Length: 59
Image 1 (cartoon, one colour):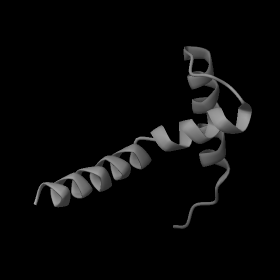
Image 2 (image 1 turned 180 degrees about the vertical axis):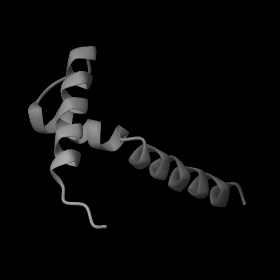
Image 3 (image 1 turned 135 degrees about the horizontal axis):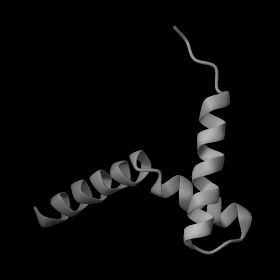
């Protein structure tokens, strides 16, 4: 049973990481060849916010 709970925990952690933009930030770092820093986090947040504001919204 512990393998089952470990698998469930990994799935939940993956969902949380995706929702909280942790995975997107890791992809950002890899794409830009950068390392984590406050300035890089700010750059990611600015780019992420700009991309979200450009998307068309329905209704």
